Length: 296
Image 1 (cartoon, rainbow, N blue to C red):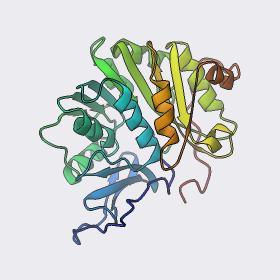
Image 2: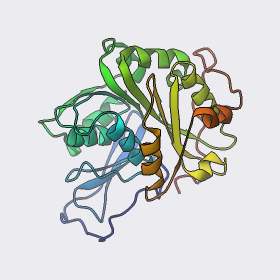
Image 3: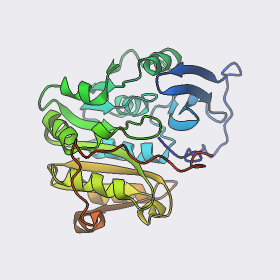
Image 4: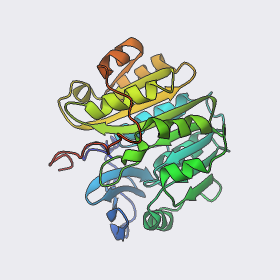
């Protein structure tokens, strides 16, 4: 889930070359899915669900990440291991498969699993925006937590969570019990990264950091300064691991983005939680709904 207006355009203002490329719309379990062509990049599309931008993908250049939160998740992927090293990755939430395509392009021979509950959406994306048949990507149409439960212990180098239902993260994907499953499937030194969304007073975000800190000793969070200050609703990217994270390089990359962000970790991030309690299955709630006009 991303704000409208987050996508950046290529500097050359390049027009799409295929005049036959037109929007595609279809009902899916999550509402009305629309694939809207990018007028400035050939064979590039934005996926919207009920008008909310979900992801952007460029079939000609899968390394191009348009949305700011996807760029930050891309930085995490880049820094998860030495350049080019294949990874075992799990993507909870499919969207247009943007990050799986990115990882396949930047780390050939990686093995990936996408878990997306919305089977009609999976069918639409696979039909309209087909995956590279050479990429080792398996797509499962099932609930994210249920799909995670089918992955063997210690299989994954990376777990990426980007799950939204009606622009909100489902409650059962916000708890310590859920993150216990994430830790189970991660290899020692593996990383968990999640796209979180919140607005003032940032209670959900603080709770998610506190919950992750109860299971992972190393954390970092990247967000726009206005989100950090609680001035607007927006996205934040969490990274968690049992080994040190490349915080200095992540900080440099996030600060160099077209929409510069800030990374916090260590004591400053712990202080930010303000004593928020760990979220359990019993107390879990969905992430807050975006305020009216967020995507306008």
